[in-house]
Image (cartoon, rainbow, N blue to C red; front, side, top):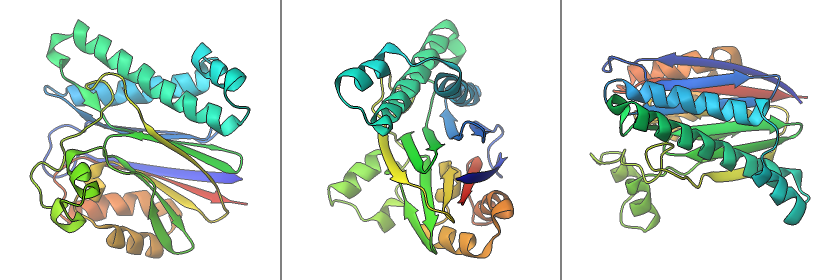
Length: 254
């Protein structure tokens, strides 16, 4: 499977600092978006640390004992092992961020969302914590691949809140999981087959806050892949985002 990827980030019209981080490693098939949180610009420290830790664990480090045990005792499926490796990588990032926060009082309380896509051959492996999202655009249809780890999403799942009303809630960004701040994490993970023509979109909530999925789908319908990340960021700003905006797009072809 041939891959091409593009990314764009913007501080947005309100914030003074860009606390998002992102990564594209086409050779390894690893793509990451992180949205940091914390005072005194600590969010940008947390997101950068998370991206670095995940990349290092997935690409630069040998298999840890934890993932070897999964392979040896529980399953022979490489997808299971890779998903466990993603979970391990996210928890390694969480440990590093907490250690840094303990060592630097000015960063206390920092954390980050994290969404990671690994494409290995014809399989796409995804893991996420927080409310940064991943989407798949296939044959003219946009599919959301992640479910936000937020208090508001729990209310939606319980049937006490509609998705439309949830967009207006003042507490919609209260996270139930984040990397670093919440300690050990249990990321949602999934694996799916990649088909030629697929487009994966990873983004921070600065993109999804002002634009519903139907709007995002229309933009993808009308935009070439090499311009898509820039256009999505620009449209989020035009639609009134108040946050940093980061987008990574990955296209697959035969």
